[in-house]
Amino acid sequence: MRGVSEKNPEGKRTARERLAVEREKQKSAEKRRRALIVGASVLCVLGLAAVAGVIAANSGGDEESEAAGPVVAPSGAQGKDGLAIPVGKESAKATLVVWEDFRCPACKVFEQNYSPTLHQLTDSGQLKVEYHLVTLIDNGMGGTGSRNAANAAACAQDVGKFAAYHDVLFENQPMESDDAFAGDGRLIELAGKVDGLDTPAFRTCVEGGTHNGWVAKSHEAFQKSGFSGTPTVMFDGKNIIQDRSMTPEKFKRMVEEADKGQ
Image (cartoon, rainbow, N blue to C red; front, side, top):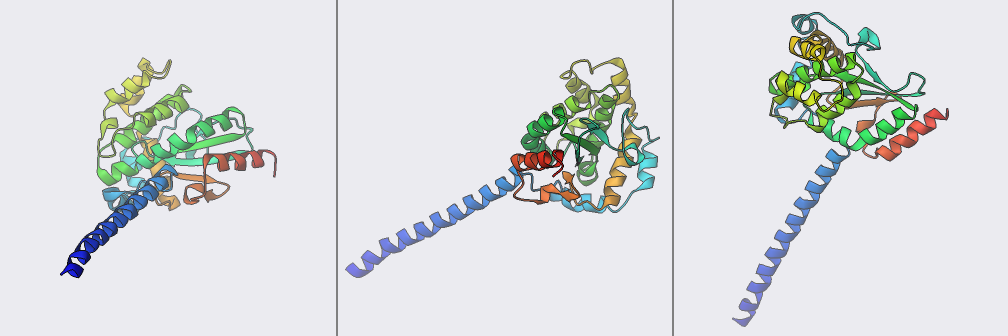
């Protein structure tokens, strides 16, 4: 009997140890998952958006942009069909092309991690960033927040305030399921955080959806490019988001090498 009584505590300890090991495995898996998000290695094709967003990426097209109204590009827009909003000096030797959705949580994570580096590189004249705005979350989860925020950002571009307002939108991004950016009032309220942006002209542009057709055209270009999600961040022909070893520091070195002509 003593042998049996001695084995039971041992069995309980073993069970507890197995449970502890399993919990540690789960914690490790969660840490790895969070690390991928922090490294901006995940895309905004999550949950329902993963299904509906992909379906939307293969439908719509020209009819969608036409339904949104005339294509009115914001001031200073560049590239094919005037769909890129440039930030930085034209003389920069390195160019980063960023496709983003203002409702996309992974885009916010990318901005949180890379924005200081991007500001440093654009301010120094080493990098130009071309922003393309898309509406993947609207198409996947419903609503108009992606479109309305993109239109408002284009309105900010009209008066040279895109970069600052872009940052404010991501800093104040609602939950993915919350379509708060659909409200013009919220977008105008956030414009108050950017000096000189909240003007009658800006309000008219936001409330009238002046650039809605342009936003639809930009999303159409995203669809036709075959990209799988946002953010898509292209540098030297490669989507650096897919490089799990990429960090802001590594990217900075790449830009500095390009600036030196290496």
